[in-house]
Image 1: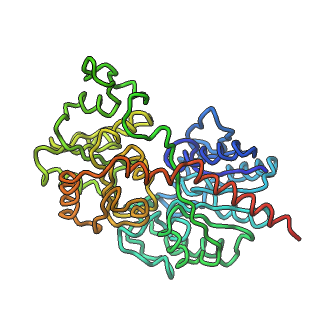
Image 2: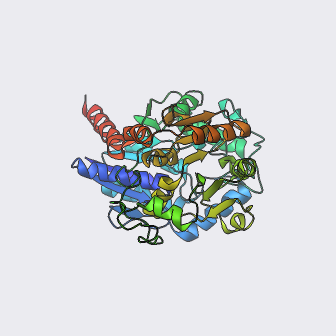
Image 3: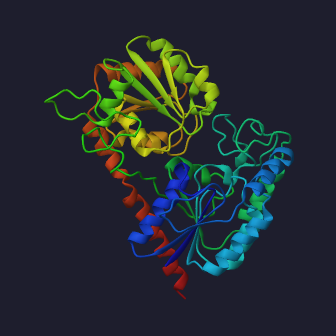
Amino acid sequence: MKVLQINTVCGNGSVGRITVDISHALEKEGEESLIAYGRREAPANVNAWRFGTDRDMAVHVLHTFFKGEHGFASGRQTSRLIERIEEYDPDVIHLHNIHGFYLDVEQLFWYLRQAGKPVVWTLHDCWAFTGHCAYSDFAGCEKWKTACEKCPLYRSAYPYALFRDNSRDNFARKRKMLAENPVPGMVLVTPSRWLASLVKESFLKEYPVRVIYNGIDLARFRPDSKDRLASQTLDAKQGVTPGAPEAGPGELLREKLGLRGKMVILGVANMWEERKGYPYFVELASRLGEGFQVILIGLDRKKRKSLPGNVMGLARTDSVEELAAYYAMADVYVNATLEDNFPTTNLEALACGTPVITFATGGSVESVDESCGRIVPKGDLEGLKEAVLSLKEQPLSPDACRKKAMGYDKYDRFREYVELYRELVTMKGKP
């Protein structure tokens, strides 16, 4: 069986890493995989092909800014992709994020309707059924249930149509492309029950929907121990007392940062937008006072310079070892997101034995229960503070957190995709 995956990137970001993990799951099961992607570079250990160009991406960005038509440009490189699909002749085509300034979605779906191949489309956000945005929960907007127009987010939310609100036309084109002219045999997958419920309220409701949770590498994200390597930025000798057990990277990191005796509150994001809860961390730090240290990973240089003294800001890291050391060092991981699908950061923290406090947002609550964290009403800053204080007074067991994460082993989760592919191929072969 041959599976072709299509995504914006390969090996970068959460979805890019998911495509690689699925590819490895296929290979482990004796199947063949190719990832076609539009931007950046791919890891050396995966069969991948980049069909996008930086120049075309720039043109697509301008197309989005000035015309508000995100996803309806890049015709030439979409034709290149279709030619490669024909040449590769996969048994299954798996779509991930088809937004991201690299595809003409109308041209792609026209081809998929003619190709007669099983199609799996994993929706990692809501863009497929809105007239503009990837998420509308933060704005409290539900226009997508009927028809998008007068978008309140067209300038402020990805994909940033800065100079024109074209949400009404975009919505109509997507509905025509996907609902009025459906793709035969296409199955939608969502990484959360929350997103699956939204799909069933949208114009995509006639498609079958499966929930397959994201998974993580439990061998790399795990509780602090001497047999896990720290980042190269850590001094492996620092803080080790002669005759004592060797310290793990989280303990070494705490020593390096001078945080012994403090309760460390960690937040992680690829991009710290308002919807990710950045202001809540700043205010939380001021309310907690001494004895607590907030650390935010993923901040740009401008935000790092403007932080108050009791918040430590760090740039985004691509080092899993370094990130795992921060998770292991933290006393609690806080996810103050105001809209999200199924954040893997929750899983990564739990796998490192660190409890999670999350706002009751989207699918973020689906990986957290009383044994491994706390769920706080969305936007409740005082509730967030009380949850932190309660875990300081009565810490949760790292073993319980790790046990919760064990249900999200990436191979087990992504093997569900392999089983779905085989099911669809078998159904296609039946008379």
